[in-house]
Length: 223
Image (cartoon, rainbow, N blue to C red; front, side, top):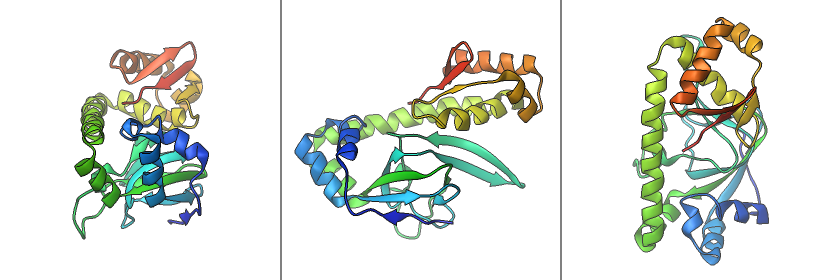
């Protein structure tokens, strides 16, 4: 159930985040402030629906706090497709889709989260009036396409690797740096596979560029 609440002001922390998040990072400080004047912030509690199921993202959304997960719910199963942490963006698939088009992905807050929503009209204006932003936006989108193509390869792998990737999507997103300490025995028990299969799956995901490993720690690699 959606329970997003509009905030009254954009914080200095939000401005700092936008300076580092592509495609907005190519904008000057005054342009970023102008963009944020058109934006709104929303807060969601754990389990709240953020997008999908008739709920529109409302624009290009930047995660400021918390963890959001895109899910597929079919045959009474919940499959994590992607995770969004601080500085990640979602909602591009809903841009310029026309009236009546529903947002395909179900996005749910996994803990208390706050997002900044940049309206579609602001994104359109930036594309038309700012060539640097237009190029950065295109580069960001093509990076997303490459990332999704890579993930499709992971999702079409044997089931144990696919389930391990989906598990790590959520586990690593619990921390802002995308890193999680993995207990092999716990993962094996939760996924109902052997420890050997978990180790082999981690090797496969590391070699494919989905994760980086340092001892017991795994970092989910982003676009």
